[in-house]
Length: 382
Image (cartoon, rainbow, N blue to C red; front, side):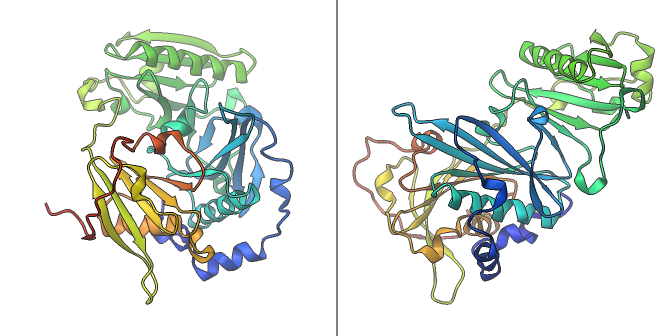
């Protein structure tokens, strides 16, 4: 992002200023009227500090200079009850004000839906699997945004761009990368969008799923322009002069290994922390469990942070004081800072008694009784 997340007013969720903003917001905010009534996805973009519906034909496409709110409405498999996931997505170049609006409007949307949603903070390049799974054939990230005055242009005037298709069979991300041969690697698929000609370049070691997704994206661009562009598929390093010229000249391509793994391998970490609210203000953290644990460690009168690998869950008990219920993301940001973790870490808020499959899978039902560790919180020793 163009500014650090911890420096934005996202870190102030739960502060008096944020509470005042929520208090002054109309209970019947125009943007939330009639939403969440049936299964599906609804998207809004923050434009000039207001939440504006995103065109349905653009669902799955995001600009890295913007912030978005995404509501996923679905039915409980065991009943006809509607359930909700709310994601606020922050592009790497979004402004502090846009990010802050997305954050507090997400809390407002949660209130509007009766506190039922599970909330996800999504940061570009570190999106949750639940978020990526919403977009077919793939999520697409483009350069630009509302602050840049971006306007869709005709194919003849289209500025060339290079899209990178990378991921596993389950989830593949499409993002814009620098228009240069240096961006290519043999393990992935790249699409050069040159307006009236679209080139799909398949690395010699690219996965079948990446090739298939790349072709779907390329054809999707064709469809957006009424089939006018010509599609050229390249396997390997064929000599197609216009392609290499657009990338600044042909040169040696990086290896698949240099392009990085298609999935992220992280050290396995499983810990539970209780969020304490000292009388002096602010929050503190007490580690109460590590390794395998059951949900019996979570008490309804508390807020707990459950750290699982590269994901942070913030569980809010049903008996938590109203003054603390909306401090989940503020507490998560302080936790990340205190434990020297990247602010791009996935943060998911779950409010008791809402059920979230990803969260439930963390716990071992065979463990019946909690054994509290009650360690002083702090970064792990090197």
